[in-house]
Length: 128
Ligand SMILES: [Zn+2]
Figure 1 (cartoon, helix red, strand yellow):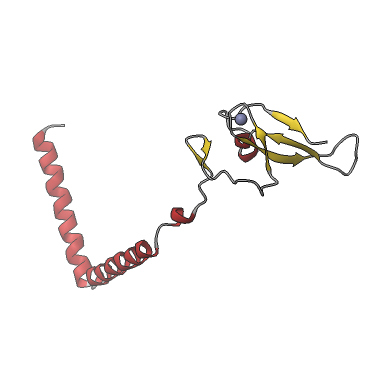
Figure 2 (tube, helix red, strand yellow):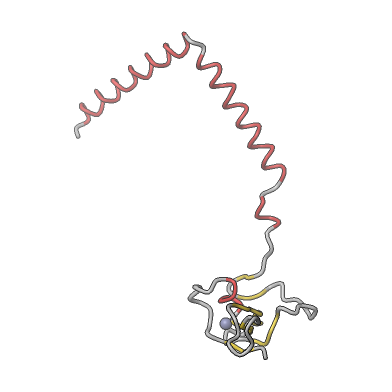
């Protein structure tokens, strides 16, 4: 693409833009659009002043480590897994020896949070 071609294209675009602008002005569209834009900015500022929703999200993991490790009182916390973080209680399916009872085990907390997490280890300690 040459500079001349680009210039022509730009001129055409600018001309079309100007015509569109004039047409919009004739129909008072521009004033309405400006009002709408100003309103959106106000709404955005109001949302910012309320604070981002991420500020209230619980911080459970940081760089793969539990930072809000509860000191006792958490029945859902088990022994350290191979990652060196407290494992988490998990239950699923049915115990084949105790029909009606789910399988229960402490597993890597990362795997409990997301069983597909590749950074989680395969630690498992059955709860009898
Ligand atoms: Zn682990």
